[in-house]
Amino acid sequence: MSMSGTKKSGINWIALAPWIYTIGLFVVWELAVRLFAIRPTILPAPSAIVGALYQYWPAIQRHSIQTLFTTTLGFGLAVVGGLALGLLIGWSRMIYAGLYPLMVGFNAIPKVAVVPILVIWFGIGTIPAVLTAFLIAFFPIVVNVATGLATIEPETEDVLRALGARKMDIMLKVGIPRSMPYFFGSLKVAITLAFVGSVISETIAANSGLGYMMAAAQSQFNVPLVFAGLIMLAIEGIVMYAVMAWVETRMTGWAHRSQLANA
Amino acid sequence: MGDHLVRIENVDMRYGGEGGVLAVSGLNIAVEKGEFAAVVGPSGCGKSTLMRLVTGLHIPQTGSVVVAGQQVTKPVSIVGMAFQNPTMLPWRTTLDNILLPLEIVDKHRKRLRAHKAEYVAQAERLLEIVGLKGFGDKFPWQLSGGMQQRANLCRALIHEPELLMLDEPFGALDAFTREELWQVIRDLHAQQDVTIVLVTHDLREAVYLADRVFVMSARPGRVLHEHKIDFPRPRELELMYDPAFTKKVQELRGEIADARQVA
Ligand SMILES: Nc1ncnc2c1ncn2[C@@H]1O[C@H](COP(=O)(O)OP(=O)(O)O)[C@@H](O)[C@H]1O
Ligand SMILES: [Mg+2]
Image (cartoon, rainbow over the protein chains, first blue to last red):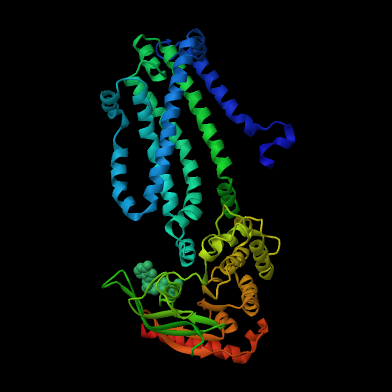
């Protein structure tokens, strides 16, 4: 507390730091571009990117919403599917042993290689983007949920089994609540990956979305617009990440507080 | 003879099928109703295995385990268990942790909702006996190790078990807290109509608390010696400075040393 300097100056520098650093980055960037006279086709200055954002706003807005939509939908499917599969895998050693190598193998496949197959099945557009986001985001959720279930203390299980608890009782009373911090913790990773998935798919096989927009802008050497797309992706990514971090602390505050207490 | 709550006769227990670890062999133990029994022995000699046999978590390959006149073939809910690790669930308050067994044991789970107040009163009474009055709404991670272990005892007793099985419950506590808890468990035994089997490696603890001490051999474990401890009750901590007490502890220590030699 005493280190934050709140008492002395009345300014909370820690809280301001993210803004200061972000603004600092853009200022340095702007100055560097001007100082070294870097051509906008190599690296546009932030002012040029803002100009592009302003000039192309209706299109950018449409593509941004499309990307946010495919990402969120894919992410939502990953949450439902990942939670269900994670619980199933954590339920029994057998299923765990059988499915785990398959999942690791599947996860090792670069998802960009899957997009063409999805295009064959569903055509270009929204569906491959949603599915790619889903495929890439769901693995960390499954692994985390299954880990939460697999790491129940044997003593806890013994105490309950000695009382006549069935597998279902142990899952409901201990396993599921226990895996929730793991689950909510995985959402931050999953949403970030979901953006990767949807943008990959949009870049290769779509006619809307930020990935498509950037690919199109690139082929026309409209570099400021490419960067405007990047900025929009960053903003969407940060906002969704913050939402997931908020959900995590809201839903499983006990896990954080109990860790602090044990530290 | 007829009043034995626990009777283990000629039990062999082998882990992991043919050629696995033979944990106990030719084990014979009888504990009378209302008695406080302690089991001591070298580490790895099968003390925890004994706990699991009595609670029905393991079924022996040969021999018989009879608890309350019934052959044990599956978990018996007339026992409560507590381990060294208190395993309180961090997302539940202390009170809700203590009530957990009632959500499992068949006899109680049907009545729980309608008779909640009655059970809560019972939990609060137990909290008072162990010296945790008013701590029911705290979370486990807000309690010290000793307090968690007290709460753990309450959880083991909430469904009014006839038999309380304690597996090195005080092993992780500092000397002062341990002595406090000896008095807690002594008073619990005096006030509740409960038979206690305490597994411990602390010989003073065994002699201070128990009516009968069983000394086990090294693995495969069986009972080598049985001691009746008849210091009058209630016993005060000063008893431990009594020469007769020290003599008994020394005698046990010698027997354990021999048991380890044989191994
Ligand atoms: N689940 C298990 N599978 C295989 N071996 C086990 C298992 N549990 C205990 N054992 C073995 O059985 C022996 C007795 O274990 P245990 O009853 O835990 O001893 P203690 O509690 O006296 O230290 C040890 O050698 C231990 O390695
Ligand atoms: Mg043990």
